[in-house]
Length: 266
Image (cartoon, rainbow, N blue to C red; front, side, top):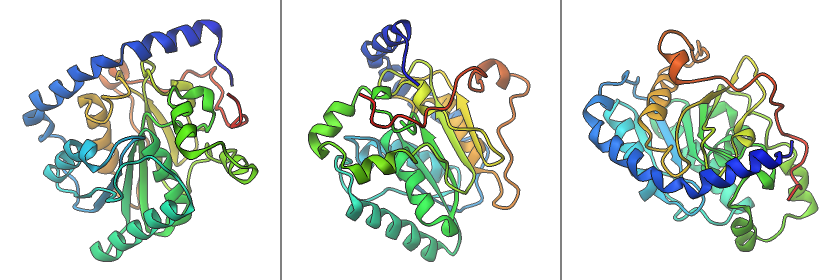
């Protein structure tokens, strides 16, 4: 699914408006006392993957909140997220299995931006130890035109091989566990069309007003995160758009197709 000229102009506008993320960070800390009153968790483990160019330092506020809500939160412990290869994927899978063994239960995976894509792929590799997956502003379609950061990513990682291209075609397929994609129509780095996944009994997409650089601390996104993580392992239910929720949040537009057929597009 390519972007129209008007949509590309919108995307460009929101890219230049990304500095507004500073207000989301300020709101996160200002509302911390209220955020700590979000629904408490059951103590299961949550591994958080940072976005492209980020590290555990960038996800520390989110992880601290999750700890305050009763979860056992973990960073990915693999430094700065810049290069993706089979070795890194193996390390992430090993980490999740290690956490599952250590805690004696399934692990929830949360990923910001590119980290959300990693979380989904890790869940596909070891679904037996994954409880659910939540991505925030993640380019799950695999289409390069849906990300303003793809040129920098390719400059560091190189152009994809034919094998990697084939794999990109399957990126939009959700893992076989409950999966939530939190996206924003005002994301200036990842086009919202590229963050929508096909709806199923175990897959949903939820729209929230946020920037890309702030969605990982955006109070409304944190509300959704807490709501999704508190779902029980054996009785997961989709997000309810009832009451005030249907005013603040939204489902993907019915006329927007899920992008899964053009990972090579530029």
